[in-house]
Amino acid sequence: MRAKSCYSFGTTLHKVLERFHDTGDIGVTTVGQVASAYEETWIDAGFRSADEMAEAYSEGLHILERHVQETYEKSADAKTLFVEKQLKEDLGEFFLMGRLDRVDEYEDGTIEVVDYKSGRETVCSEELENDIAMSVYQFLLKRKYPDRPVRARIIALKSGDSAVWQMSELELELFERTVRQIGAEILSEDFYERTPMLKPLCNGCDFLPLCRKDPAFD
Image (cartoon, rainbow, N blue to C red; front, side, top):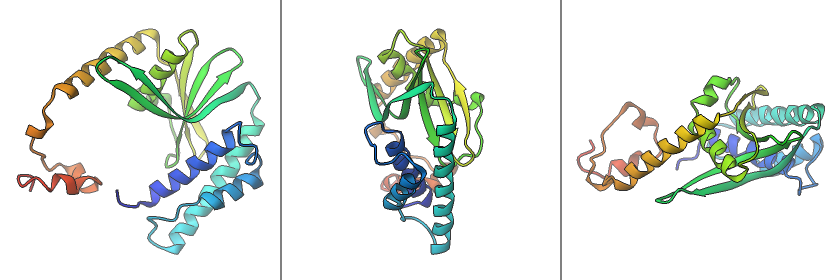
């Protein structure tokens, strides 16, 4: 894939937040330590100029400093169970997998998956309801913690804005049914017999060179 500034920026923030929320990493707990970790972790690939990178670096540092301050200002009613963890569920014909940014446990037993969006200013619960990844995360967590309430939270890092959504038991059942159906269709489809077709979204796709290998594509 081509180097892109948005990928570099987002990956850097995720790595620093992983260290900050990782209860086993006692070396990144203060604003100063987070700033040092940010400098060590910074990825400079994909930026068009030194000025663009400097502006992004400053914005990222501000985001992290605010996140640390807000984390300590909130009541300590939750503890982090794990960060950057992959969960996998055997659905018979295939495995459903997801990599979770962070999972917290609240005093009332609620399990909450937290997903960071480095390019977002705002977020609302309606957006979470239409986010496939957040549904996958809740489904996987419910399988791991069947007797616990499970919910999902997205944090728009640029502003600190966040939204929460919790799937009902019926929604979880319908989601599993849909996933199994789509998975079966994918496994039974002969993709080698398909001819790739040019679409408006192709121009921004990193995998366009693969489709161009088909002589019928152009």
